Length: 402
Image (cartoon, rainbow, N blue to C red; front, side, top):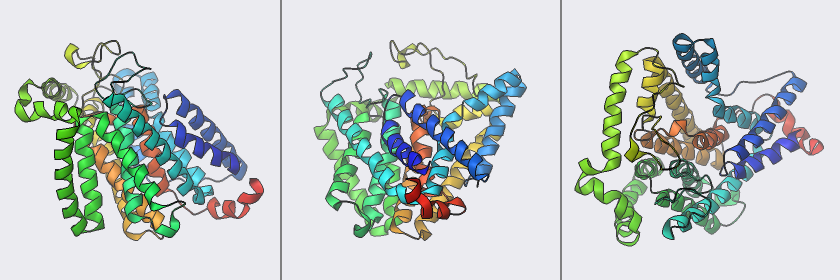
């Protein structure tokens, strides 16, 4: 069984970048195998963050049940199903912690391929498998925002491994890791999501600040130079940023967001405690802000925080913020006091990824994007897993099981 979990971790590290049905098949198999192992062992150690997860789930269930009945409450819980990847990955890694490095590098290699493909898409306006020809790169997932979210996570992890992983712990040369890091950052750049650019900027500065103050100031200078070079050499950078700098009020994206946020405050005031329910955010008629042929209405608030405020009320938003805060605290603690260079580097990577997605989440509902959830909480499990309980026994017998 442990050998099967190992192969599923490798497969998931590849499939999470593909159309969403594929990673769900792998995750479903992993969950089924984990349940079988738990029944066989008759023991289960809950992962870290179980309290914040339960609190958020309760807010989702109560909001749906009180507003729309028990069936909707249960259906609302199902909307959180992508978070199950955290529990599966945590359980699998607790039995074979030595697989972390291999699974992470498979993830980064696949992310690098996705980043290069996205670069080709954007530079050459080449979208052969998509109904809508985006200005931006959309990667293997065929959606710029989801693509950007995935690349934010892998870019932060790759950068942190470059800075924190000791040479003797690398399975290959440092130059290969640097190349993988660069390719993953290409994905963030050419996804051309301005919120993702802002998020990754904050993340890189946070990672640099954690490493050293000297590196932080070098990063600030290098960042300014890089933005200037991209402005002059990559047309999409100027196309995306110039409207914000010259006349933000006429920028469609900015105008629509401000209008939606104003509506959200009015909607929240009608149900400040329980909200309207996670499945009942109203359809908003903004024809100039939807993707032709893909959607007819906006069904989210273009902000994690306002969307959860409207749908779950103040308690739900608070539960979400607590979940983010506890994740940040645990990842940062791992960075400061990890027992190995891999522990520390992955902790720093999760700090960066969380900062990036949280900042971008001010302007995007990336918490509602299935692909982003499926990679975000998968990677977070690599830091927050526990070596207690069955892990030591499993490691001792892993060769027999394989």
